[in-house]
Image (tube, rainbow, N blue to C red; front, side, top):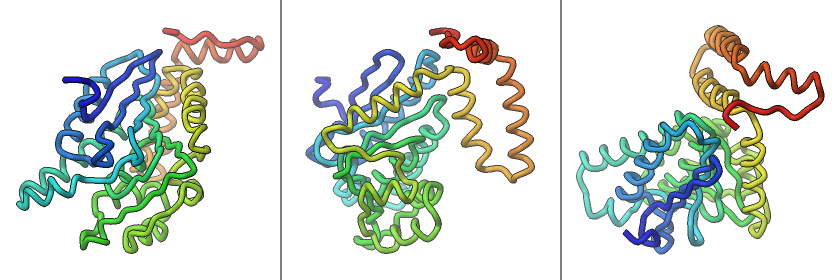
Length: 261
């Protein structure tokens, strides 16, 4: 397949995997083909110990317009819809469970399952022209699966207002709500994402991978269980060669040299 026709373009450089949604004429809607391609890319990359992070980007004016409504309308069957939403849910969980941070690079509109995709990423940087909505309510469909990711990023009242009104919020509002991390002028989006990627890549690979796994797991625990899990995780992390190197570098005022770099 010509890469220009691939639903998702994959590029690996210096430990950073960039996955680019590539259906600009369909506003990068999450068709079955896109979901399958993304799932395959994440499954394949999960075993790569050299990765530092993943950037999820998109071509065209929209980041992602959610599910492919035309494809859904052409397959009016309960079992089809159940399989589709479960497939989407597996992808979102794969992003959360991926061993290194996943950064959404949002250059345009992110709606419904597209907003869910942003919320499922560990970090998100958006152009100041980007907008976000969970707009299924406008066509009679409550965005139930996007609600799972959205409500784990923003407050309950903010999430429910977005879900029940379908109204757009700006990039600045998305930062204030906790949906995204940073906003940059559209012509500076690449530089803003690169700065965040560089910051992560400079850190110990052991610490980054330990932190990604620990952070999401403890959120699902009761407070006493979370602290017990955190203590055990931190004790194991302390035994890593990188911690010995990092503390020695700090004491001796020199840059650390991480294992495997």
